[in-house]
Length: 188
Image (cartoon, rainbow, N blue to C red; front, side):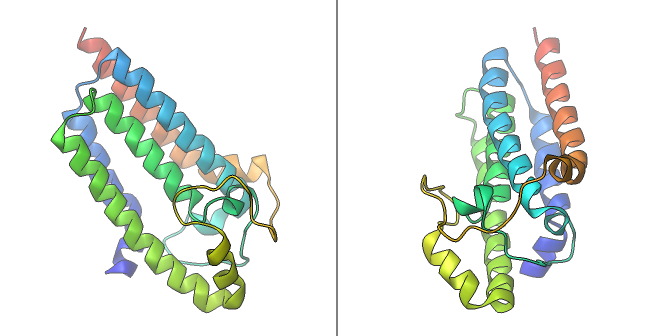
């Protein structure tokens, strides 16, 4: 099941996103608050992709090197944390005020999927990098970032790489927010 979830993670999350956008009833206050969370999430994703690059984007699980610098020095899963912040922002915008049971259920489904993905990836990375990854895991939390970075951080940042490999996500991000703004404007 974990392999299936990893391979089709984009499609599984797209189903949740399409449902949320279809049911969305955005208002301006929700859009402002949601966009703030989503910008934080996408900023974190860009920062992480600038370090990790292409191997994080495919259907096949791979890791040519263990990247532990940048956001990876503070949290083991910055891409997934960024995705959850993005999801929170979209749901906040779509269903403000944050009291809609559908929005809460959708976010909890996303959290559950990411937990499955992280468990799958961590088994893979432990098998590939062994003690190096185990030491990293004891120093860096999986979900909640810590302020002090990992002491033995490795990796280099490249904006060009980050923007290049995040381009499709950025297009979908812009389309999602464009749709939410249009739905909010039409509701006036």
